[in-house]
Each structure stands twice: as C-alpha cells, then as structure tokens.
Image (cartoon, rainbow, N blue to C red; front, side):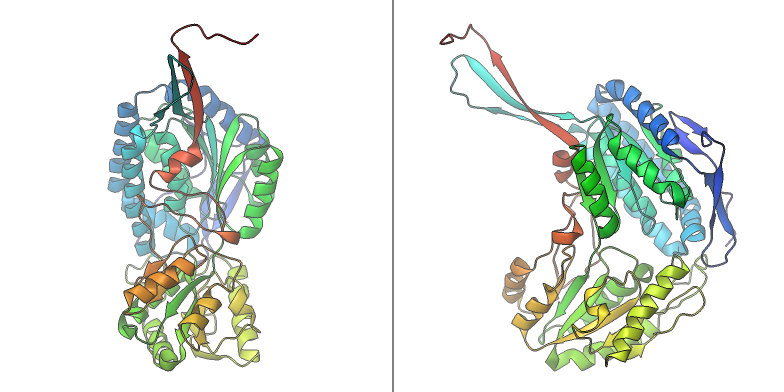
Length: 488
C-alpha cells in the first residue's frame, strides 16, 4: 500500500491552518521504517493560548446554536470521516506502526462516536423541582461550560481524540485538542474532518507540539482561566500530575488512565471461547490499549490447557509491515516500549516463569508472548506492560481468582469466563473495576456506554449520557411569580 501525502505540517486554530508562532517544526518518524512520517508545527504556550482564545471567542455563538444545527453538523462530520477512512487509517499506520486494520477500526468506531454525539445534542435536559416557597417555580438546568481542553494519546488516536471532542461539542462547548506527539497527523485529521463538515471557525482547534514542549502546552491548557474542563486519556503517572495541577486551579477533570485488566477463567468455562477472547484482548494493537488484558487469572484445573491453546493462537498471528492489510500485529510505538516489555519478561523468567511463545523482540516488533506461572514476586504481575507480553497466574478456586484479580491499584476493565452466570454476576459485583464483561474480552467499548475506571485508572465517565455530567454545568434557577414576604 502506498503512503498518502499527509497534511500535517500546520495546526488548526480559529478555522485556519497555521504554523507555530516561532515558526519551528518537529519530525515524527515511522517506528517501523525509521523514515520521517510527518513534519508538524512545534507549538508552545503561545500557540495553546491562541487556540484557547479562539475557542473562547467562538463559545457564545456556538452555545446559542440550535441543537438541531449542532446535530446536523456532527452527522455531516460522521459522513465525511466515513468517506475518508482509508486515507486516515493510512496516516495512523505510518505514524504509529499500528496495523492498517486497526486504523480502519479506529475510524469505524469514531464514526459511531460522532453519531452518538449527534444524538446527545438535545441532552441538556433539566427538571422542575418542588419548592416550599409559595407561587414559585424552581428548576435545575444544564448549560455548556465553555472551553474544554482535550489531551489525547496515540494508541487509538481517532477514537480517543474524537472522544475528547464530540460530546463536548454536542452540548454546546468549544474545544482545544492537544495532539499526541506520536500521532499528530491522525489528530490533525480530526480538525480537517470538522473543517470539511462546515463547523464555524474557533469551535474546534487542534494544536501540536514537540515532545520537549509538552509540559508548557499542557500547563497553559490547564491554567488558562478560559478553559473550564480538562479531558485526559493517558498514563496514570501523567494523569496524576494533571489532576494535581487542575486541582490548584479548581477545574474538573475527566481522567481515563492506565489499566491492569484481569480476565478470570474458571474451571467450567468454555476454554475455546475464552482463548479466542483472550487472544483478541491481549494482542490486538500489540497490547497497546488501555483495556488490554494484562493478566489471565486461570483456575488450576484448566490452566495448562488454556495457556497452551493461547500460546498456539498467539503464535499464529501474522506480524509485519503495518501497511500490509494481512498484518495482524504491527510494531511497537518506540524502542523504549520494547525495552520495557523485554525487561518484564526477563524478570519473570529469572524468577521461575516460563515463556510459552514469543519472548524476544524482532526488530521494531514484539511478538505475542505468553508468560506462564507468574507470581506476585514478578514485576509483570503488578506492572502494566502496555505491550503483547501477558502473564498467566494460576488460581486455586473462584475466590482465589477474585482476590488475585483485585490485587492491583488499577481498575479499568475486567472479564470473567464461566458457564455459571449467577457465579459470574457475583464475581462481577465484587470486581473493583469500572467495566466487567462476562464471557467477553476485556477490550470492548461502544459509544453509547458509560466508559471509565476506578482507583488508579482515573475518574469520570465518557460516553452515553454520562458525558452530560462531565461537560455541562448544573444550575438552580427560581422564578417567583409574586412578591416574597421577608422577615426583615
């Protein structure tokens, strides 16, 4: 497949494609080939400020725009993206080393995000609340908050970039999206979709920066008094810093952070179905997904069979050129990611675990890897790999499996496989995770569902009507239809 020309050299601010204030750029390299994938504006604090000012200026008119108009524009954006999916999937593969198929899935899902957001355009509903005051009407009303700052990662660039933008727009907010340094062209494609759909200038702004300038750009997005909400998806380490900074400025944040998703497989499970879900949940996008299965907690009676079948499944996956439509596994985002995964595998092996498949990098790629017999003494038991190396932990029974699954500071996604649905529901109720799928993979999301984690996986929810709570203000308004007698 031929690489497309990438229009990624400019930021999108106030309806115009513009360079950085100081004219500087930076180059993002293709992690598979090492060639330059994109050259983009190296924005700094002043560029972020310009984008925020543009969004603030656009807010009064956009917030007053009829919900039917907002809905129509969002649906048009969905149609534009649907037509441009192959082009954008190609950009994602070139920039990140993710497979073309994963890029297409990103786009397909993102079309759904836009259409769900369009359905939410009439979501600013309130209520009339009974009051003890005579001849008075009391109401709870929802209003857009103003400028929403979105900070999105590279691992599912279209999904997570659009998730930070679409719902806030539907509710009447304006948006500044900070593109990831690893996927700037993909995130700038979001701006071009909204531009082609005819959104008013300033409503959507996308800024880019070089890696060394990320801290000052993020600080401006949080500290600037014109931003009222922060939407962040990324690591727990960075999310904690963002939450601390936002707290100093008394700004609400929606955080979707790291994960260590367990998949419990009990002795009575359909093993082949569990292996199929495990293979997808563990190795899709090289395990570089927040919901990726990070631990297989398997009852002892079937642990050997499950692990061997999963290893065989993983070995069968085709790994190679991300632009080859036949590739199921692409490359890792950078050498640091490979080194992190390799260190976890080597540590586990040194402490007694066995590698059933994979276990060594192959150039910029890391093959699906199953590490069997992992114990709490090993780093891979506790640490998020964010890669395709996955531990199998043996549990003595269902209660032990539940204990092991909850033995983590993270709490995003989880799964339980068993034929006993009542048992599965009891376990699901006790799992300390924001999401639990019974007899399904840990990697699953739908635009209309409330998505978010617990504990160190963040707080707040994306999707569904949960977004109304995050990206609007709830206000109390009273109307007194006759004079009120006061005691003084």
